[in-house]
Figure 1 (tube, rainbow, N blue to C red):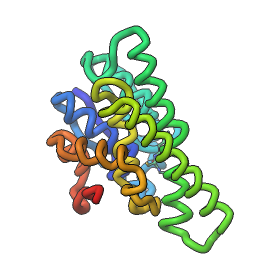
Figure 2: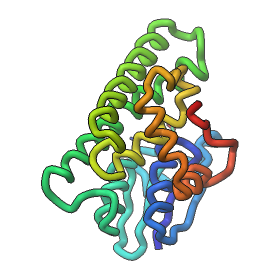
Figure 3: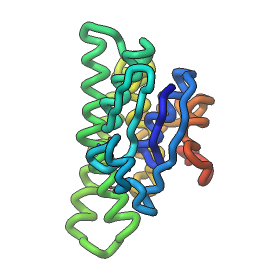
Length: 211
Ligand SMILES: N[C@@H](CCC(=O)N[C@@H](CS)C(=O)NCC(=O)O)C(=O)O
């Protein structure tokens, strides 16, 4: 059995979306980060970095933190959404790492300074918004080049970036400036597994439409 420790955030949703796409059974253990449950000793034993998401695979006695590592693990375990070998595999991993090292951290800081704490630091607001917007431009160009998904077939690279783009309103991003991102966002939004995975652990509101 797979146990997912998560909360309604982009990093958490990456894994609930992937698990829904894989169609495998999993148990959800909500870790309410607004109540600081990520600092409990029980959770620390699974996630030494004290952040969600984390995963335990009882079948193989595996405990994992870091959403990117968990995505690779699940994709390899079930043989879907990540090519097994060759240049196509590294293309997907390249864009997964782009999300992990770029879009996620920068958009996360934009949420912090622009959405939750406007006026606290003009410098930080400008720096993180500008970089987030630049990354949307990079994604837009990539999606224009590929024509449909981020790196070949629909993959963990799409599932990693999509929940971050779903927070475009918090980031002050106008999706109409990034038509290929908007087209990609709306196509993925139609997927039933994405809609189910988005609302894990709770249904907190509608998914932004992208319009
Ligand atoms: N690089 C980590 C980042 C995880 C992360 O930042 N998680 C956030 C929620 S999206 C969290 O647990 N925040 C609580 C805290 O910082 O105390 C990953 O991708 O798993």
